Image (cartoon, rainbow, N blue to C red; front, side, top):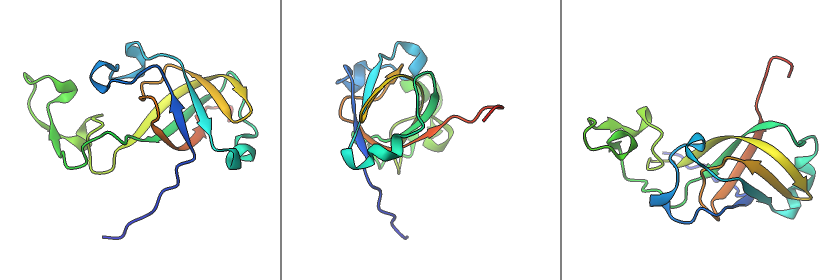
Length: 134
């Protein structure tokens, strides 16, 4: 199979450090966090503004890439499901997809609401959430 190199463009700064204690979804008590982009991507942030909802793509660097089936939400009373049918962070390509709301922007630091990613999680990309007026 062909491999495609990815470029980390920044890191998450979050109070979440323990995967076991982290919320599974943003609406389950995820804290606000900072997205800290490498200085060379400063111009790529032009056009983002507070109040904007964006999709954040991260690399879930603490995931198990060999896991192919899980009990959804870690609940062993539920039947095993393939990881492609779940939101499990453990998967062959552990790409995290997060919908976040921009609170403030300070240079290459973007403060967002409700991000369930762990501290130091690598950032791969950020894209505006498309709406009817966009």
